[in-house]
Structures are given as structure tokens and as C-alpha cells.
Length: 608
Ligand SMILES: Nc1nc2c(ncn2[C@@H]2O[C@H](COP(=O)(O)OP(=O)(O)OP(=O)(O)O)[C@@H](O)[C@H]2O)c(=O)[nH]1
Ligand SMILES: [Mg+2]
Image (cartoon, rainbow, N blue to C red; front, side):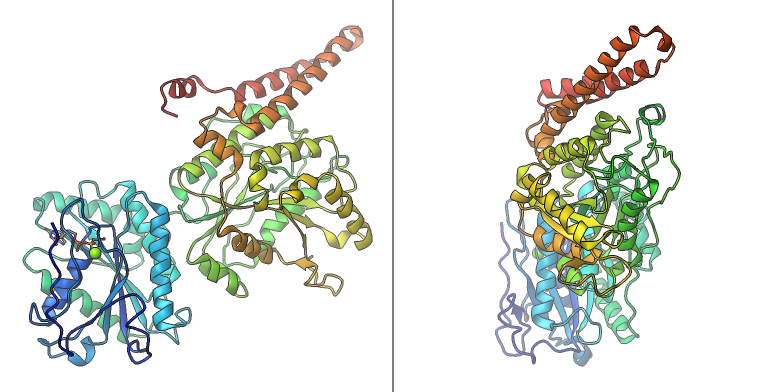
């Protein structure tokens, strides 16, 4: 059942319901002194009804345009953006109130994160179309965001509510809003005590950080709807007359979170995940350390997803260089976290490797074009483990990388790009580098090679001619497949600026991220292993990367058995049990790839 909207306001003094771009086309209609209020919230939360309360509060009901309100579950809600300028007749505040522009758009649909992004993008575009340069506070009109919460919903803490709040914050960042306000609607639908409980849960849960940052809540109470709705408008009117200070950045989660937290709550669906090879050192790390210290809750992901590094001589400094690449990115931002640089020979693989989240506001000032592309989304640099034969932990590593990629994919966090670092000053590409590369290729899959940026570092410590010769060889041989599938090679400009490293040939770290985000927009962002695990419901060992790791482990097991046989013929070395230990470790690695009983059960019953 649909209530037909009233269109009694046909006279010239009536408020104007504006279609997205048709009516606000001339500067005289959208003026800098406008007080623009974006009304957002979940689908059916009461956004359009709220606007109608305001209209009725300032004018004689029935004389002005109203927003369309839909009744009934089968009805579609508001589908496009409509703006309405207040044209007060009943208030003595015409002068001020007529500057208020209320913008109503589609509601945020439960669990449909791409739709949330669409809403954010459309509102942002709407503002840009009507008010021009909204990025700079000086040029554009005041912009407030009003978030409408249906307080009668049965579970205010559902993941849908939490996601809607995340989207609200994304929108706030995207449009650089001046103020934000939370308003609760549909009071009186449920008994007061249950409504109060719902509100307390919101205040202690998803709204906590916002409240701590000073964002207020207004209740639109039953029987006082118009009065309370006008109170909201008054709030924005008062605020816009004060000197403007940008909202403090509010995030629902810690900026930096352990990888396993990212599975449960740290990540946002619209985050742009960029997988990065490792940091820290791995020299001398043995399977023992991985296996003994490994705990179930470690999603450690020892480093270097597909990193190729010097195999023959592996001084720790090489790894520090990798770490430095991430830290160079971070140094230019306002983010305080840094990847830990270890220069010891041993490194415990159990320490958490932390993804670092970088919000738009924290980007370096010169990243204007990147900021534009992000539209409020955050960048998550994920330091992933690498496959490395000295660690002998490829099974365990794959399990952890795959678990993270699978979970993040299920959460809707798609991979924006993969950075494959290579130290160009390395003069070898050994067997394990080849194996690493093979696993890396299988993990990404042929279709996703487009996402891969091969980033060559350390150009300052090698003669450029020699570096170019290495690069040519790598391109023709080891990286041939990657390049044929449209992976792109970049040379990182060394920190010490020099005319040797021209801007045409060498990229600054953030320029590479910019290119990743640019290329990411209209592309399938699923890695092969994510497709295999989630869409095709394969067990890890049935994935191509899993099969590659298994084959590598089998080879290793075969080689170790040969050594053992040979040793038996030499009784002098009988007491050395290191081969047995290594064999055990390889067996354990292979077992790790096997599905658990629970996984088998789930697949058997179609629950995977
Ligand atoms: N009881 C009660 N019902 C309300 C209130 N506000 C809105 N509703 C009802 O909630 C439903 C949705 O209201 P809308 O104003 O269309 O909500 P919306 O947020 O604009 O919805 P979309 O445009 O679909 O996102 C309608 O059936 C309204 O009558 C309220 O304060 N109390
Ligand atoms: Mg609506």
C-alpha cells in the first residue's frame, strides 16, 4: 500500500522537490550559504518521514511538497536522491530556514555492502554536482549528516546496523561533513523499556566512538515528532554559525589490528586491501620455531607472500629493506604505526603481523588524486608471510594466508592489489625463489595477475646498468608469465633524491599505490584461491596453491628420506636426529593442508 505523496504545493512559493541534477543546475539555486543536510540511514528507518515532519513543522501541513513515504514490505523505498529546500510559511525564521536543503536518498540495505558504497558515491557526486568543490571547506556550503536510526528494530546490534554505522562514517569522510547527528525514529512502536534498552546498546556499542567524539543523539519521540524534528534542524543551524572545525576522525575499530581481529571486526567491506610482502627478517628461522611457537590463534603469516629475495647470501639487511618499503609509505602519512624492523638473526614466526589501516585523512598531502579515487574508503596494507625454504613452513604459511584471504573475502573485503617486492640488487633467483613465485602465481590465479605490481627496490645500491640487465632477464624468464597476464613492473625511486632516478622511470611508493587503486576500479578483485575456497568450496589442498605446496613438500620429503637412507650407511652420523626432525616437520606441514573433520563434515552436508 502506498501513500500517495501530496503535491499541493504547486504555487511558486512552495518548496521544491528536486530531482538529482535537474533543478539545482544554476548557481542561484545552490548557494554557498546553503545549509545542506544529508539524511541517511538504513532502508525504511524513517528518513523520508523525518523530512516530512520538518516540512509540517515549518509550514501549514498539506501546502508544501513532501517526500514520498512507502508503506508495506513489498514496496520499494526511496530510489534516487531528492533534495528539498525549506520554504517556511509558519515560522518567523524564513530568512534562515529557507537556506536549509534536506537531501533524502535511498536507504542502506542490510548486508548489501556494494549498495552502501553506491549510496555514499551518489551522495558525494550529488554534492559535487550542486556545490562544486566540496573538498575545501572554504568553497562549499555547510554540510551536515543526519543519521536516522529505527529504534524499534528487534536487534539494534545486528551486523547490518554496525555496517550501516561504518557506512555513515565513510560518508562523513567522503564529503568532509562539518557535523553529524544521530536521530532515533519510531518511538512508541515498542514498549518504552525495550526501546530504552535498544538505545543503551547502541550507545555502548556501535555508537560509542561517535558519542565519545562529541556526536549528539536526538530522539524523535512519539507525539512530539514535529517539535523534535525541528530541534534537529535548529542544531545544524546553530552549528553552522560557529567557526567550523572538521570532525575528528572516528573509526569503529583500532586503526591497526592483529590479522585475526580483521576477520571478526577490524575490516570494512569498502576497505581497499593491498597485500604486501613481508617485513622483518627470516634468516635462520627454522621450521622448529614456526612449529613450536605456532599457536592456533596465530594468524601470523610469517612474511613474504611470494617475495623473491637473495637466497644465497641472506643478510638481515635485505629484509629490513622490505620493511622499509612499507615504512616509507607510512612515513609520508599521519599514521604512527610502523612495521617492526628486526635485525636479529632469529625471528619468531608467531608474532602477529599487523595490517595497517590508512584513512583518507592520513594520506600524504600530495596524494590528492589518490584521495579523490578513494571516496572515503581506507587502504589496508597487509603484510603477508612469504614462502621460504629456510622456514620450511610453506604448509603452515599457506594455511594462514588462505584463512585470512578466505575470511576477508567472506566479509566482503576485496583485494585491491598485490605488491610483489623484489630487491633488484640481488644477483640470484634461486630454487626457493622459483618455488615461491610458483605458489604466488597459483594463489593469485591467471585472471588476477592484473592486480600484481612487481615493485623493484634498492636501485640506489646497484649500478643502474646492471640493475636494468637483471630486470630484463627477470622479465624475459622468471616473470614472463606474470607479465603476459598484465602484471606491471615498477622501479621504486630511492629515498635519496637524485637526478639519476627520474620521475618517468622511477615511482615514489605512494604513486604505486595510486596506480593500484586506479587500476582496481572496474576489475574483478577476487584472487584465485578465494574463488576456489569460497565459491568452489574446495579444501585448501585442492586449490592450485595448495597442490603446489603439497608437491613441494613431497619433493622435500623425498629428498630427506634419501638423506636418511644415506646416513644409515654411515654409522658415524647416527646420533644426528635433525633429519628425522625435518621429516616430522614436513609431515606436519602436509597434514596442516588437510581439511579438518569439521570442514569435511560441513562440505558433506553442504554447509561450507
Ligand atoms: N510508528 C512509526 N512509523 C514510522 C516512523 N517513521 C517512519 N515510519 C514508518 O516507517 C516506514 C518507512 O518510512 P520512510 O520514511 O519511507 O523510511 P525511509 O528511511 O525513507 O525508507 P527508504 O527510503 O526505503 O530507505 C513507513 O511505513 C513509515 O510510515 C515513526 O516515527 N513511527
Ligand atoms: Mg525514503
